[in-house]
Image (cartoon, rainbow over all chains, first blue to last red):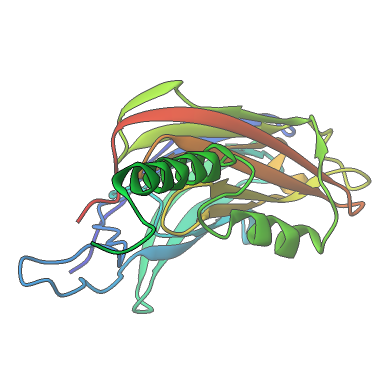
Length: 108
Length: 152
């Protein structure tokens, strides 16, 4: 199932050196591995454990998530506009699959 | 009846046990329930982080521990010469201390991130920032949680 993240840049066009804010939300259970089902069995952990943002191929921000991140993880951060290009967000699941979101930033 | 062990002594013993238990609990805050202290030591390589520079923005009272908005900001010019590289977020009384680690670089422009976290109970949230010169700064903020967020 292809999950589509929701992402938003506070501006599509920026001057070089401006700070661009990124907000992103992705649907995911973020199962902590601490909960038990009705039969008393531990529900296995399944979370997005890694998040990376690249702009024009260069990493500007990354995060490692632990089970203490809420379900449907939200992340908000900023980066410094340097050059035009794709803003790519990648979340990595415990099972190795990835969720990718992309927008474009124009830098003048 | 057990000899030499009357009701009064039994009560005194009981009261003593309660006192010990209460004392044990009240020495609490410094002795975190989980491994947050070790996690800090591992992150800093044994150095003690200085106070300041790090700002944690969290609600004082979180009604729902399942999703508590958290913003962390670290004061830094974020230049090649002086920038924040990593910020470790810990929760002192969750079943596991780790919450997240944010990685910054000069390309970030500002060391600021916001996400939503789970808190099992009323506790301190801790942020430790690592600078590119190898120094560490930390901040701590207590959040009162009405309904815990790690239940099962």
